[in-house]
Image (tube, rainbow, N blue to C red; front, top):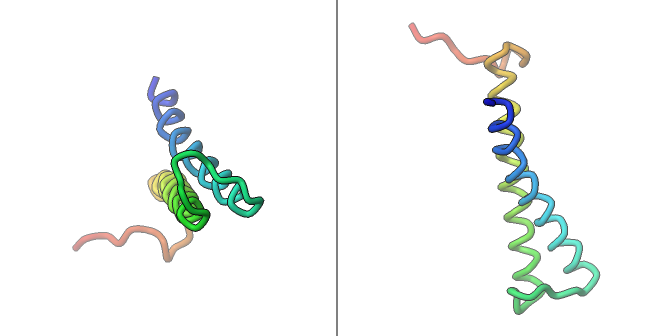
Length: 81
């Protein structure tokens, strides 16, 4: 059950990142989507969605690898004294 919840949590930002790529691509080819009035606004919204989605997925994977000790020594958490 927890794996399904984790998968759903990762799919939502993944879809947002894909939507961001689509918005930026549409701006490049001159296709203006409905809620946007200018191409630059559409590009900035797409870039924001892409960065947020990718950052969330990357942070999730980094946090999981850090818990499992699968990271380099410089990324391991420091022990509190």
